[in-house]
Length: 148
Image 1: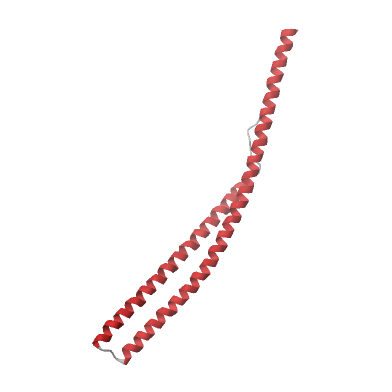
Image 2 (image 1 turned 90 degrees about the vertical axis):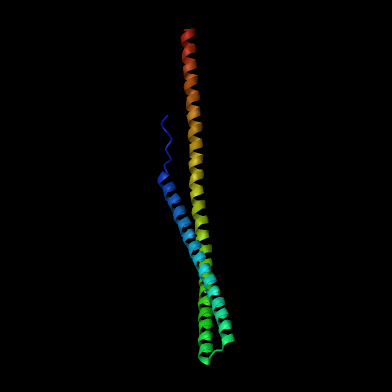
């Protein structure tokens, strides 16, 4: 009997590649989410640092110009923080979409894997059946030779 060959091997390769691409896309989105979270934390630290600077300068006295500059700096940091929070929400949505794509690609790959397993099982059963027939033929041929 000839060696087992899965006829849909190219489809299996395609499904594996699609799953790999989906994994890479998810990893990319997760990396972006981490970057945004790190930037948000940096902005919080910058705001805290600016506030500490303001508090220390108020003890020495400050001008109206300094107060306006501080308020502008805090407003700017808050706007950047809000923009990053919105960006984080967008990336969370992209993460969910990427995860769904990965699930779909994995499911499609599993379907082809199951088909391959099923066909291999059928192949092994057929090979065992053929082998049993050959053994029976050999046995019958020997028996005929002894009895003739």
